[in-house]
Image 1 (spheres, rainbow, N blue to C red):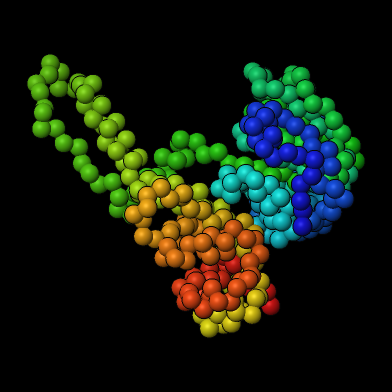
Image 2 (cartoon, rainbow, N blue to C red):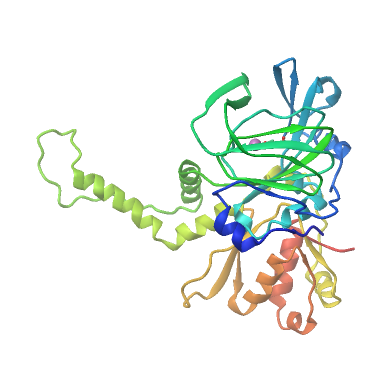
Length: 383
Ligand code: SIN
Ligand code: CO
């Protein structure tokens, strides 16, 4: 279990989140790395894992993309192996990410893990996303500045760096220390010795990504089929001219769809997608019957949420709603309102076990839901 120390969450949210960088010394006391460089190298061999090696020799930079059959040939000079979404593959890495649960699930992206040798790093740069970087074994010097206009440089086509930022933080991080870097704050980390770093990344979808996903959702679900009408059509001088009130009518048509329940449903569906479909397809998921799951629930067996899975739902405003709907991996599940509390408890607990078997006896529905979630690979029972 990883639990955060030396941070006042309320104060962090009000004063630092998306505002200012912060070093949290010994955020994790007696930090134990959830993996080592061999695990990381092993992951980088997998075709479904996104990995890269950034290396620097006499000021010439190289970037190589995985999968790597033999990483040694790419590890030249000062080099870092960076692997994305490690939380999807290693339960202990997922546990580390959960320590940051005070930020909503759907805002989290993935855990990127890097291993660097002495003097390695990816150079000074900006990221569009907020990040907590945890220092694992070894030590690394971190410099972080404030947003500004920086000259961008591309020492390699896949490496975007900047020059000339003034650090407002310049510190050496030791195992268990954490640095929080808000989006668009320039930063540079240079390994002082062999070291591991864990980056808890957050996502912030752009309008473009939202529109693209909303369009897919509309097509898949046959939504938003209302057509433009213009009973009030008037004569104009140029047949190519679009009147301002006609532009306004287009705007209104789009605004109207934003007010619908389907728009809220799309939001939850969109934000529930985290693990690549391919990662699930590669799994051999053990199947259970309702009776087997019922027996496990009754006897207090633990159910583990699979790494990377996010169950997302929209806060309910209207009391007229008859069911509770949540989404996992873009799939909608609906639950009768009387089961809502128990289901939310189940979804929120990374490790769930039924504390009161009587509750389960009253809900066959809950058993069926757990069976479906387990048979989909989203949760798995303890053996
Ligand atoms: C890392 O090298 O582990 C982090 C790179 C970054 O600054 O984003
Ligand atoms: Co960065």
